[in-house]
Amino acid sequence: MVNVNDLNVKFGENHVIHDVNFDVNQGEIIGLFGISGAGKTTIVRVLTCQIEKKHWTGNVKVTDLSPAKKSNHSLILTNIGYVPQLELLNLYFDLSPIDNVEVFTSTYGKNKKEAIKIAKNLFKILDLPEDTWNKRVKHMSGGEKKRLSMAIGLIHRPSVLFLDEPTTGVDASKRYDILTYLKKLNQTLNTTMFIITHDLETALICDKAAILREGKLLEFDTPQKLISSLPSKGLVARFTVEHLNEKLIEYVKKFSAIKTLLRVGNEEIEVLMDDFEENLPKLIQYMIDNNIKINSMSKDFASFRRYFQMRIQEEEEKEKNLKTVKVIKK
Amino acid sequence: MLFMIQLKYLNDNNLTPQFEVQGFEEFTIPEGYNSSFNSSIVMALSFMVFGIAFVLSILVIVQEKPIARLLLTPLKRSEILISKYIAYMLVLLLQVALLVTTSLSMGLYLAGSILDFFIALFIIGFSGLALGVFISSQSKTKTQANQLFLAFYLVIILLSGIFIPIENMPSFLQFFAYILPLSHGDPLIRGIITKGQHVFGIHFFWLFIISLILIIISFLIFRRRKYEV
Image (cartoon, rainbow over all chains, first blue to last red; front, side, top):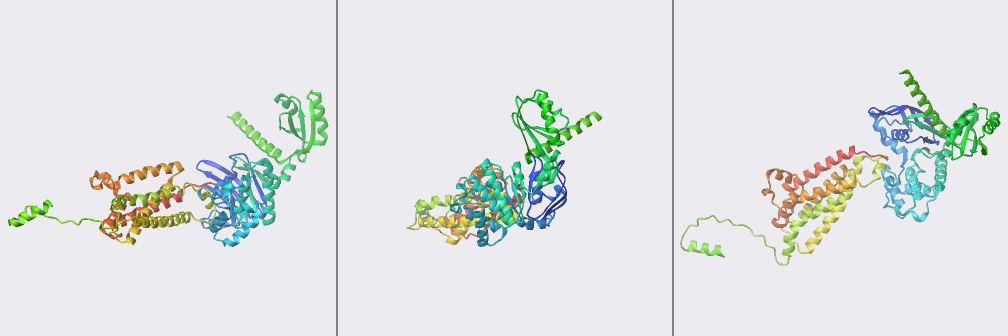
């Protein structure tokens, strides 16, 4: 459905994307994760024909068509849908949802009556109240606008849908609703989805997660597989430690079996170890011996958020070490 | 009267006049028409219709945020711009129709034909529309477009020949005046209302050429305009 091989993007001297490779099948939800400036949007912009060919190299195919050829652009754009981060870029606020559907349908040259039928069906899936369908968009709530925006992206039945930060700006309780709706749409319409996001909770609905850092694709796999690639298959011990400070953390880190230690709260740390079951009692003993007061302790599997943090931290450390080696060589 | 007495005196004494007599057609408004309205509206009509079209189209590109999203559909950039022209030309047609009917009903005396008058107003408005879209397509923000609108409109009115005859301006200003649309719009309307001229003449031609050039530049600028979603 979407194939990316050796994708490199350069804007003059600025090398933005380095050798990115991945393949996506029909009906998968792909989460593109990364901190700001990681290159998530740039990859999507290549896939949606927004970056001129002179800026990128590689073999890219979207719905079996290459965006490198200008003649393919209009076909690719017919096959894909796009939901921007800001609704004001996607919707005419002075028109009603149905009028918005008509405007966007006309751009695809499709039958309006049929499109309105499809749109009404989408509105029902997305639980848009029927009384808002003919009211102006500007009177709708934030969540409704977001859902309408998604529906507009799907009115022409695209095979691939790109969503830019669908959960940003939505309050925490509604965030899960948006994700549920996306999954629902994906299951009903079998649409492949690309979700660019900072929100790591999105991994809950993703079939595959792509982790990007500084234009490099670090990982591309199912979130479960990624988590189980951690030491001891992702088993994590969480400690609440009294008067936790950097010194104490350094102390705990000295325990040899610890692979990664993350401070996750004011008084909380999470620890990943080799041979978890065997080493956990030893670690607790070690902490008690060193007068570190443990208030509580729990055992769980790492969340995708933890995996992401650890993976990025690992990469940063690698980079630091490389820099030190270079300095020493000089 | 004095002239007639002088002429009679010359004729009676068999004297040849030492001056040349040139006759001129005096423009008089027939009875039943509003003469004070007639003299003032001739001046106002051209910059009214031009200003309306200009102010309407000034934000057409710069204000419309979903254009960025429209470009992610198979729609071409040129199609977006063409749709804007068509929509605003329809609005302009309505406005011109309104202007023609109101001015005629208020007692405007037309020496020329109504159709000529209609076409003349339309082409003047169209040049305003072309200039508005041009400014809109090259402005980055609404503020910039609004300020450019004021700057252009003031210069265009001042150099239009409505207040200061173009022939009395310095030659470099005359050059500028003639490449601005209203300097052709005003004589065009004046010619039709007071002299009964036809619309298709040199002024129509220049208005058309100016609009065409502005439209072509707008297309070129809009093609290169950066949009990001």
